[in-house]
Length: 266
Ligand SMILES: [Mn+2]
Image 1 (cartoon, rainbow, N blue to C red):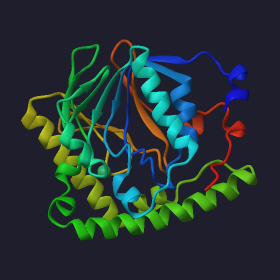
Image 2 (image 1 turned 90 degrees about the vertical axis):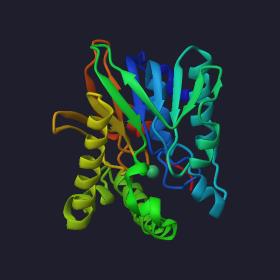
Image 3 (image 1 turned 135 degrees about the horizontal axis):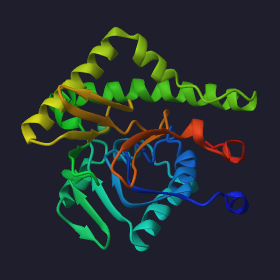
């Protein structure tokens, strides 16, 4: 990445950035895109909304390439330079839930957190697995789902490597399937409704979550529902501008240095 630095534009500053489902330690993680995003942006507070490190995957197979290390170093570097890092635990990194309430310099660990936007709105920030009945009641079914998903992502990674070589833009197989398969669509809408209901009970204006790898900003029953998406296949982030508006960024579509990105050596 170093030789590209000269060509880089000045980083864009946001009041807050929210990312989730990075899955470091898993071969499907798009760490190069994330690095490019983290180096192209600065923020006062960076929310890591769960499943940042995939400890489930690492238990099965140890995979930790340089790019994954660089992501951790870049995030810690931001903390060192004054960015407040709020790590909200997910299910793939639930071991970190033992550290909830702890603070390490500018990095703090929470199970959930209430974000207040510049225009005074309150958002409950939570990974979302807490609402996933399958994950809560049957670990084995959740693991099976995770393995099928891994297979899908591996197929998608190969497809995209080929597409990039041929000069086609990034395309998400999993995203296409999620939109077309009825059960997936039902699951997503049930998840969104459950989270909006939780936000309402919490007395907040909105909710920011992750978990289902499906980025979104919408209004459900007067609640602003935001989902960060993921950095496995869709490469999305939520950003809050200085005046408080929240936007969804698709980094594969925005990355100026797309062609210069090195392909991950799997
Ligand atoms: Mn999750």
